[in-house]
Image (cartoon, rainbow, N blue to C red; front, side):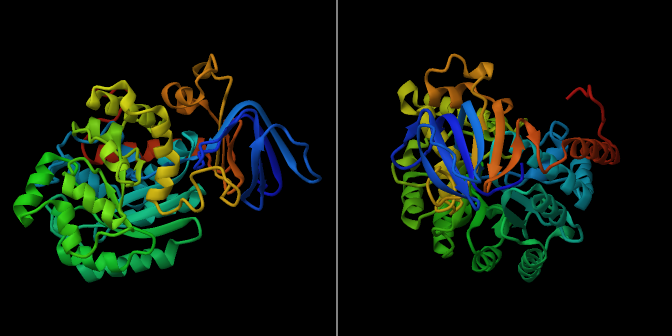
Length: 453
């Protein structure tokens, strides 16, 4: 299933996610040399040399874009020590032992497990954020997993230099951070995996580090923003104005800014984000997992700010359909209005807006001629998709990751008939179990299938 040349794909419905919102039912798509060459209605005859895929009962759409995650943490899903992520959080005890123990092999095992699940959820483009710890090789492990995954990854190398969240012995200086970013790029970067800087978040970095990393960005610079009221109040007390205003005053807020968790932005900050051209990542499930507030996403869409969806950690799942549905539900509940947020908006955020947020909409995010053939095929015969009326609503509100039948990136099938074509699930899962057992035992945390967590 590896060939990416000359394919003709038939589907019961083709959801293009193009500007006009066209859906062809039945429809088809042609691929040549990794790119989409034709999209339309009906079932045209195959040309000589074209491989035909007849997904006559199935739904074809652009594969999903995940705009925020910490993939290595997949290794400790369900076993992480309970902690509140506050501005002054200190990492100590079992949590510190586990964090130090999560080194190269562990990060690669956890991230590989994450990539496996991302693909099975229809995601072919993702970000991954991993903090650098001096003397450890966490990022080498995480990026190695990215390279091996075969997926399109914007890896956000995260740096801190003024926080108790990471003991000071493990923090890099500004010049060491810049040098480390350069090393990672020269060692690992390729046409699929790009490495970008991330000053982790304002309470954890100096202004000097933010400005130095901003100079090194190519496609984007990521940053965790105002996810909690405490963070918002901290910024106003620390600087005398909100966090986003501080980034603007530092000269680092621009069209290449990717802001994770735009939860507590006041009206002036929303205006500022719009004016600067910045984008954001909203992680509905993770935010609720941590007991955080729900932002009104209409404030961003009304100003044309691209907001993509993110799985993030902690989440409990890598099911992107769950994230889309939860986004719809949070918005309707927040606004006390069923009409305030449609399933189509969530699907746009999972595809088009995610691609825009990552500065990739010229290449992915919709099924259009000239774009990369990043494709997702949902099993139209899955019980969740019955009966078949209300296509978009069914995809967003009823489908699950288990309905994902085929996934292609650049026209190459990475998942076909539910079977992995490049990753090796059994190896990845058994290795991650071994590594997790060792890590948890070293941290004095109970390891077992029936742990009381």
